[in-house]
Image 1 (cartoon, rainbow, N blue to C red):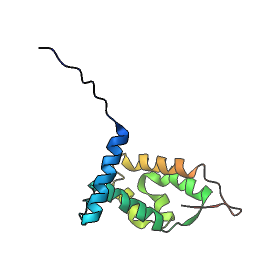
Image 2: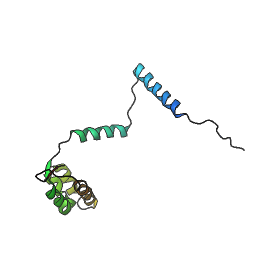
Image 3: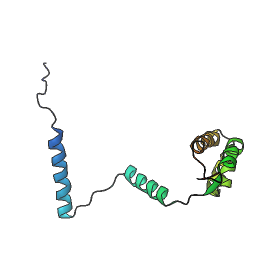
Image 4: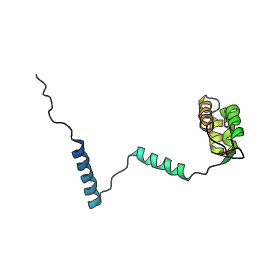
Length: 121
């Protein structure tokens, strides 16, 4: 059996136009589209990130706490994020909080402190 090669190529401009037309028709007739789970989770994360309270902490103290007590969440208790601190403490028997503390350290390390040595975390 011979396989036939497709001589038709995808026309992405036409595909995009048809998709826009589909969305416009759905809007016109009031058909709502169900958002995928990943999109809902992403929207919730960015809404939380934009509305969360930032805490002013001493950069030097935060980095030291992160380095020496990060394995049980000492730096999270210092920045008044007690639930995250308890999460680190509950998992302190595993290596997971050490990895998270290293990430927190690397995030705070390049931050420029203000004239008093404080950063917003």
